[in-house]
Amino acid sequence: GQRGKSSLPHARERTLIAVKPDGVQRRLIGQIIQRFEQRGFKLVGMKMLQVSEDLLSQHYSELRAKPFYPSLLYYMTSGPVVVMVWEGHNVVQTSRTMVGTTNPTEAQPGTVRGDFSTHVSRNVVHASDSLEGAKREIQLWFQGQELLNWDCCDQKSISEV
Ligand code: IDP
Image 1 (cartoon, rainbow, N blue to C red):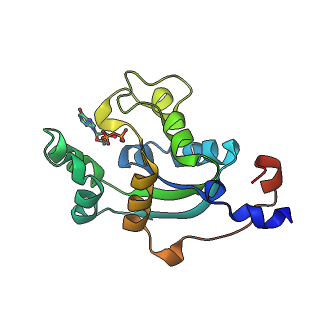
Image 2 (cartoon, rainbow, N blue to C red; image 1 turned 60 degrees about the horizontal axis):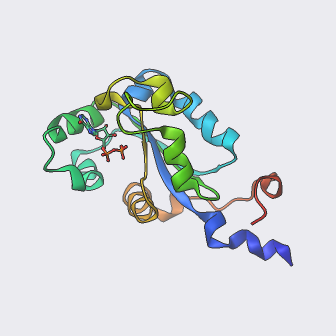
Image 3 (cartoon, rainbow, N blue to C red; image 1 turned 180 degrees about the vertical axis):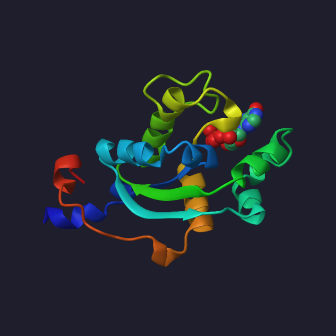
């Protein structure tokens, strides 16, 4: 019957969202979680941690040559971050839209960055930018057993898959 369809890959798409140290300092964790919950995504993993330089250098390996890389490392290790995995239909792309452009100067009001930030060096939140990136980042930040497969009681009202 229809029940088996809940395991279709696109309904199970996952992405990594992190509240960066500035977001934690500014007490924005709750508001950011609320946006993903109310959109209809499912939280399948979450933790607060002080990030190591080693993990960050892997997370931002593509940015190593950038002039802002040292200050990015300093900022991201300046305090705790809250890292989460969210699941749902098209969650990678939809999350990027919800988070807004990298540079808050261009971010639309209504997006996290457009509502809560003004400068690219303190843009509050991270969201994976592709399916492959999400897969890589989730494996980097989480152990398999830290991610939960659970059924949301309202799933059938949120998506037909
Ligand atoms: P993204 O976070 O929107 O995916 P990336 O280009 O992957 O954007 O950059 C990663 C992070 O590096 C940004 O979110 C921001 O915190 C920081 N960053 C990017 N460009 C600059 C810059 O020009 N100055 C300072 N920090 C930057």
